[in-house]
Amino acid sequence: MENALQLEVVTPDKQVASRMVEYVSAPGVEGEFGVLPNHVNLLSALAIGTLRFNEGGKSQNVFISGGFADVSDNKVTVLAESAELAEDIDQARAQAAKERAEKRLADRTEKVDILRAEAALHRAIIRLNIAAYR
Ligand code: ATP
Image 1 (cartoon, rainbow, N blue to C red):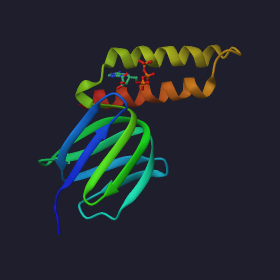
Image 2 (image 1 turned 45 degrees about the vertical axis):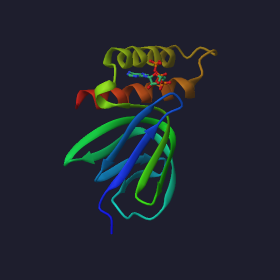
Image 3 (image 1 turned 45 degrees about the horizontal axis):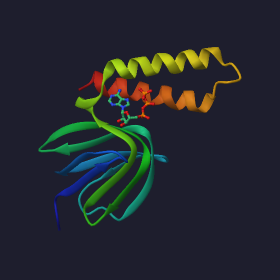
């Protein structure tokens, strides 16, 4: 039996994490799921949310917006649309994105794509939450 997991988090433009961890939890579209070593193989679509991992007994948070997680042979591969380690989140940028989305949703002219504005607001809120607890 193995007691370690390899975690890879990649987006279309960067590799965000590649490390050995003890535990990963991810925001699956059907709910949060946790992965310990020797987990059964699994493929899940991901929602906008927080990926958490434990490394050397320390827990770390990563922002994730959509994508997929594949679990197989003690390796968790996350292919995300966008992802940032907590320490790399630009709070001012997320705050500006939040205000922009809120303004669009308040205006609600015909030109506003409501689902797009709601998704942008959701991303900004999760980023601000992760940055607040780092
Ligand atoms: P914005 O409107 O500020 O671009 P967004 O939610 O539309 O925010 P995304 O499409 O999720 O942005 O991401 C585009 C790229 O910018 C990705 O590489 C993502 O990691 C990065 N990014 C977006 N917002 C932040 C942030 N607040 N801090 C750090 N990186 C960010």
